[in-house]
Image 1 (tube, rainbow, N blue to C red):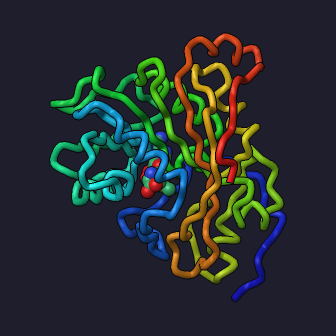
Image 2: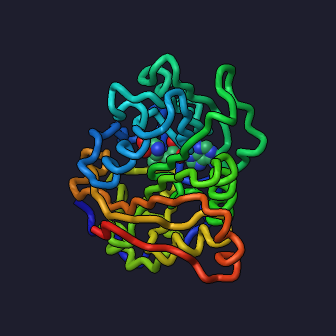
Length: 268
Ligand SMILES: C[S@@+](CC[C@H](N)C(=O)[O-])C[C@H]1O[C@@H](n2cnc3c(N)ncnc32)[C@H](O)[C@@H]1O
C-alpha cells in the first residue's frame, strides 16, 4: 500500500463530490447497514410521533438508504431529492409505494415542485444524512435555508455531517470548516486511481452553529456516531456528528446577531 499523503491542499469544490452511483467510479461504494447509533435511533423515534401521512424530506437522499432502513411500520412518507439520476433510479427500487424519490437540486428548493399526491402542508420534518460536508461551501447555506423554509414552526431538521473527529480529518490535520481534497488519502494511498477530487470539510459544533446562524434553526442536540466507510479497502469507520435542528422563528433575529441559542445533549 502506498504511503498515506499528508498536507492535502485546500481545494475548490466545484459541484461537490461525484459519488458515481452509475458505476462509473471505481471502487464501488456499497450502501451500508443501518449504523448502530443513538442519533439514528433518535431520528426514527421522533418521526414516529408525526401524524400519519406526514412527509419527511430527505435532502441528498441518494439511493434511498434513509427510507429503506426506517422502521417497517412507519406512518410517515419520504420524499427523497437528489441531483443524481442514477441514485434516484436506485432509490426507486427500495422505497415504499407511498414514498417518492425525485431528481432535483437541493440548493434550489424554492423552485421545486412536489410530486403528485404530496402537499407542502404535509411536510413535517427534513433529514440530510452525509451531504452538507461535501457540498461546495457557498451552497450549504441555501440548503439550510431551503430546508428550514419547508418546515412548520417547531419542525425538526436532522443533519449528519463529517465530524472533525473523523479519521480523514486527522490525516489532513483539518481545521473545522476548511475544504480538503481527501481523494489522495481515501484512494491514492491505496493505489486506487480516481478521476475526481473528494472535496469535503469537517464539522465541529461551532462550524454547524455558524452555518445555521440566523436561518431560524437552532441546535437542540447533537451526538457523534460512526459507520462503515462503504469502501472495502477502507476499514476505518467514518465518524459523523448528528444534529437535531429545530425551527424556532423567535430566535432567528438573535441568531442573526450572533448569539446562537442552543443546548447540547448526548454529546457522545
Ligand atoms: C454521501 S451521499 C449520501 C446519500 C444518502 N443521504 C445516504 O446517507 O445514503 C450524498 C448525496 O448528496 C447528493 N447531492 C449533493 N449535492 C446535491 C445537490 N445540490 N442537489 C441534490 N443532491 C445533491 C449526492 O448526489 C449524493 O447522493
